[in-house]
Image 1 (tube, rainbow, N blue to C red):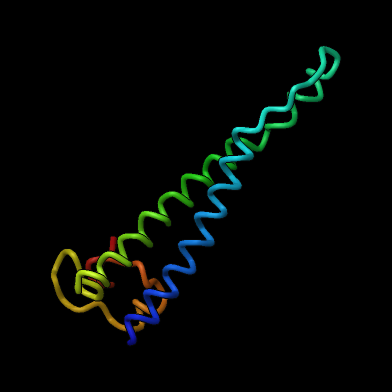
Image 2 (cartoon, rainbow, N blue to C red):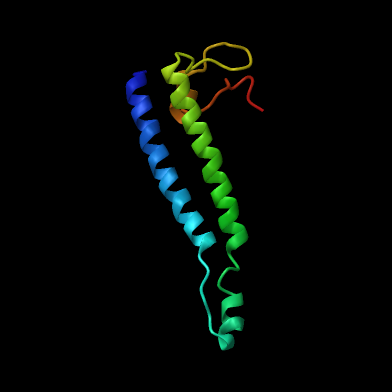
Length: 107
């Protein structure tokens, strides 16, 4: 497994997720300025906010995971389980490159 290639892929995914999080934040912080007669219409504009908030939380968690994986590559800790210190199977790393644990230690 070429770690430089993995690192580049992680950085690309990180950039995509950060852009998505920024869009979600803009959506949540947008506040239309309705006229007095429009309040009923406006009440329905942000009915999806709880879903968007969960998506933003998920994006933040993924960003943390991706940054952690990049840091582990840079500090030669990538591919080792944080619990048992055994190597993580290459197949698992290909499927979930930001994983910190082997399949045996995974919850």
